[in-house]
Image (cartoon, rainbow, N blue to C red; front, side, top):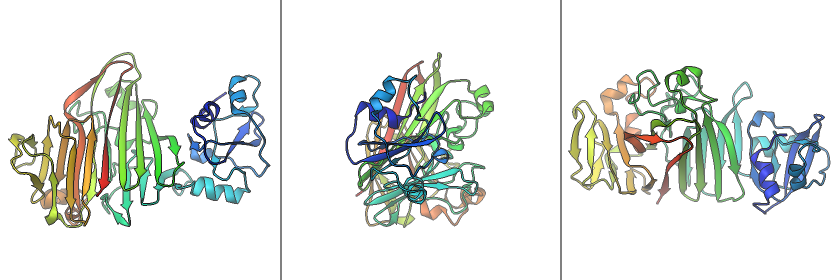
Length: 390
């Protein structure tokens, strides 16, 4: 018998709110419906959701979990609907597959899940299953995340823009045999859990393990791991948090980065505050990897910029991106910050960007890139950021 997060939370009685309808299959392959008062959803595979028009039946989830051998229910596929009754197929498809109380499942032409869209009272966000890359964050009608209009969005290559995840290496620090910036941003993730219980707050978690990546990568970097990436929308804030667990028997080293591209309304008015007196590596051709000290209060974007600030114990920063409202960034458990804009000449060499796009973007990235992180067997490393429109 298989359990997902939804059934486990039902049995534990962790949350109590509206009525929810769970649609699942029993061992005979028949659709059944179970009512309970728990608003948590786990969808391992949205494409496998089953629907029913039968009347709900009363089942005690605790009894189901306690009597595994006698149970007729397989919880591998479930869907929770927020009105407490299972309607006809059309209503279920509309509510569960297309828009589940602020969560939309967008599929490609082949019917495969492609994008999760999250909607709250004040904001929305879109996250691709490919790379778990967030590509849009709209707050009160304004897009605050940059996505190149030339970006590859078909899974054939990394997405240019949004918030790609760097793991297990930054650039080619561990080995040149692994992809640039690692394999997490070019792998298909799975949905781990969805919490849509509040109209003002939505949370979606994605998971990637060594079982989901290409075998060729594991031959180069032969380690067992689990990444859990959680995206939370609440009010005018967006939280992105990465949890990295060593699930193998041997320790491994890695680097990681939350590579955020911000949408810029006016590059001439854009700058970063909060890094004064910190040292940084200027990795531009002009800088030639020279270590410098940030002498001014702000870092404006007036030329090609690729600065890696290290040992930064300051946690809160302000970004001016040419909009009326600035953005506050608060990092957690990360020691490095990167400011990046390729400017004119380098943009011309990037086919998925182009020189017409560089004035509309600025990267401010948080992570651990200057020194590798050593993770013992069974250990967990966690870091993240909270970005808020002021």
